[in-house]
Image (cartoon, rainbow, N blue to C red):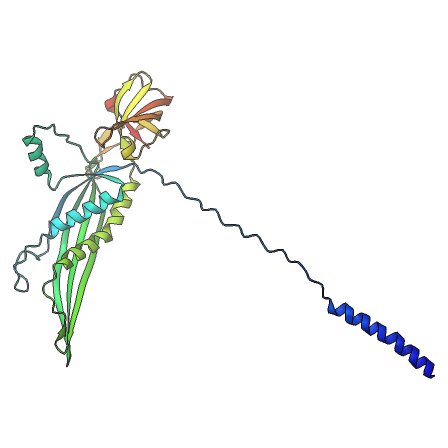
Length: 317
């Protein structure tokens, strides 16, 4: 019996030793780290904008501000001139339009006469007419036991209309408003004492113009771009407009023959019926350096222009 116990002991101990050795050497798994692929940035090519010719012909001042003294100040702020300048700057800076001078056209004409220059007399496709319908300022004071706060507020409201020169029709109208304010305070007699802040006028006008300029630009860009044929030479067609107007070599355009002009008995307005497409052209080269002297040389891809006067044709995208 004792011998059996000893044999069992000698059999169990080696087994335990083997199990201990097996557990003391754990298996190490090699995990592959995922490869991080940096996303490729794709820059979308900005499409050229075929620029429309636009002119701001009038921006009136229907508000009473600037026509009398205010707060004891003989105010001479020209709200309508400021509104015209701000709107002009925003349209030009967008890079999407050819803006023609109209509000200061007398200065341009004087320069032409002084230097015996040839007047260009470029016509606009669309006219912008606007007015400052409301404009004013107010001061608000909040006086406490040991402090005083003064708030100056300027408010402006503008209205604009967009007119199609070809039809005389108002195709867009919108009103917008803007407000600007400044605040200063004193405590125990210490702090900032503010006077008349004239910059608030400009800020209020600028904010009001900004609220309508997007609508103006969107409506202008929704209208079809047109150009005209300058010359027909053998198989080449030379059209007005080049790189500065957004045209590129390889661009294709349609040539239309003018539709009939009739009077609409419902509205009493003269309208032009849709034109007839007579050819397709493709830009092969360009010339000129400014809006006024640039053009594009095109080839006829499809259609026939023989026997048709260039005065009866127009180019459209």
